[in-house]
Image 1: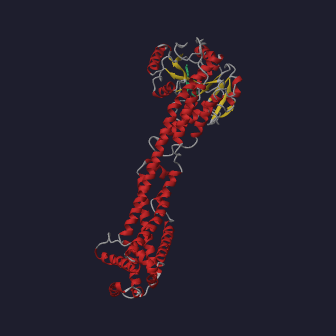
Image 2: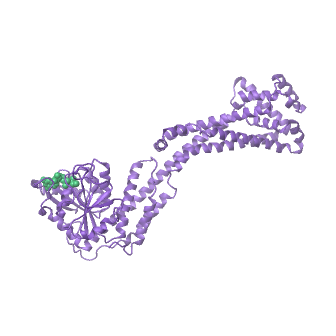
Image 3: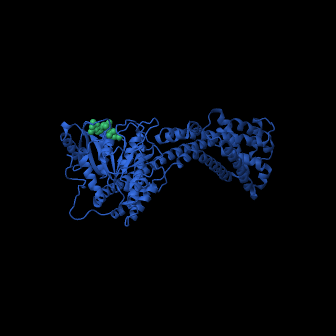
Amino acid sequence: MTGPVDGNGGLLEALRKLRRHLDRDLFPLEVGDAEADRRASRELTGQLDDYLIPRLSAIDAPLLAVVGGSTGAGKSTLVNSLVDADVTEPGVLRPTTLAPTLVTSPADLAWFTGQHILPGLSRVTGGRPRGPDGSAGAGEPGTLRVVVAETLPPGLALLDAPDIDSVVTANRELASQLLAAADLWLFTTTASRYADEVPWSFLRAARERSTALAVILSRVPPEAVGVVAGDLTRLLEANGLGGTRLFEVAELVLPEENARLPRAAVRPVIDWLTGIAADAQSRADVVRQTLSGALESLATRVPALADAVDRQRAGAEELGSAVGAAYAAGMASFDEGMLDGSLLRGEVLARWQDFIGTGDLMRSLESRVGWLRDRIVSLFTGRPAPESELRVALEHGVEALVRASADGAAERALESWSSLPAGRALLEEAGAVEAGRLGRASPGLRRAAEAAVRSWQGYVLDLVSQEGAEKRTTARVASFGVNGAGLLLMIAVFASTGGLTGIEVGIAGGTSVLSQKLLEAVFGDQAVRTLTIKARDDLRTRVEGIMKEEAARFTALLDAVRPPAETAQALRAAAQAVREHRGELPGERRGPAGDPGGGLSAESGDGR
Ligand SMILES: Nc1nc2c(ncn2[C@@H]2O[C@H](COP(=O)(O)OP(=O)(O)O)[C@@H](O)[C@H]2O)c(=O)[nH]1
Ligand SMILES: [Mg+2]
């Protein structure tokens, strides 16, 4: 009875495959109504685990009828009355009650205590649950109490579910979970509550998934018997549920609080259920109806999840581009700083003046720039200063520029993430401290920039010495010194006067013009252009590497959660595979329908 049925192996495999694709969190980002997407995904995985996969693995296993409905509808009373034993606790208004009770015939006990359906709920057996104070009703959350009732026929079990409208979220979710695991819903409502919205949202879901369903209209005042049922019948018809089996149970004066109803009051329900349980074909019909309805629903539910995964990827893309744009702007501000001459101010300018002023450089120059030498010498005092000071000053200047650009980019990236719900949520998850850190350049930036500038300077010296190895320039470079020429080239890299104003143009502009002239004197103007471009590109590449590292602090948060690119497509393919194997479900009953009271549609209910 519990072995897999021949012929549906492909379908089962398709469902298992689909299930595996749902294993990871597919909706980590706050994109669109992510909460609804997560809920839909949870419901789907729940139904696959709790019902579809175990049910298909054991198509002949006993039926599970779940008694669901609103608070106080009389569900527990009904279950006790149907099995003629106090197996579950009616009248309990304890919002903490979380362990639902499943009543089974002794013959089916092994199936229901084995973790086949609802494998996530551990089983407890034995008497009615008691709270710590001995009061009735409490049960361990996450458990399913399995109770035997001799009166129940083999082949059918009843489950007393929590209230679908419980004030406790966990109870409501459990109620939905149990209903999604049912072969058959015994949906219970009352004369006073049958028009409520919550029950109808469930009933509509049952209709959409063509779940096998019977409605029990309970607690009907004797004078209203027939009247309310007529109204409810019209409502069912109006909601596409015409023909639903409807039982009416009158509200009786009970001999004591929480007593069972007299057998006669629930006889029609008992007879109907017994009829289904006794007949293998009726049971198979119920299972097939619910199973095929649930499988059918996958054809829309799974692609909807795939679309939601696409939205997640698009959302991640948007956050990624925001970071990209912020750091591109950071790079642009570095470029600007490199060219606007601002690097040639302050400390660099002072060290440059020292450097030039030593006169060593001047003396080594060729005569055609002699006029320049004269001007410089008259301009600057001859303080001796090692060229290393100029190099250090340049290094600091470039570092400061890199840091300012990275700070600006970080601030911009943080701002744009904060303006998007998905970004805000990621930042919140990272924590306020980390978010604060993200808004500035990383602590490691200083070292990275130092290292980059030093190796760039090394590169520039290599460039100059390579160029100096050429016959036409060897003597001139030698007279100059590779270090001296290298420094001139570094200065020339920052030689644009675009951003300078006032007197600075004169000085900084002069600085770069001078270095340019000196370099040209050594290498020739064409070579200087090439060298400058090479040196500038090399520095840019190094800074770009740093910016990439900086941006990675943001993108790492995204990469940690972003669903893989192939997920949505894999989900759609899995849904398609399920559809292709749908035909493996045991077929519909052939020939004239010998309905042993088990038909779930069309004709009127016994109790009406
Ligand atoms: N007098 C009377 N009380 C009922 C009837 N059906 C249920 N009740 C009471 O209504 C309360 C709620 O019933 P219960 O079965 O716990 O509803 P549940 O919340 O749907 O499980 C309990 O105190 C029951 O004893 C009925 O037909 N007559
Ligand atoms: Mg109850």
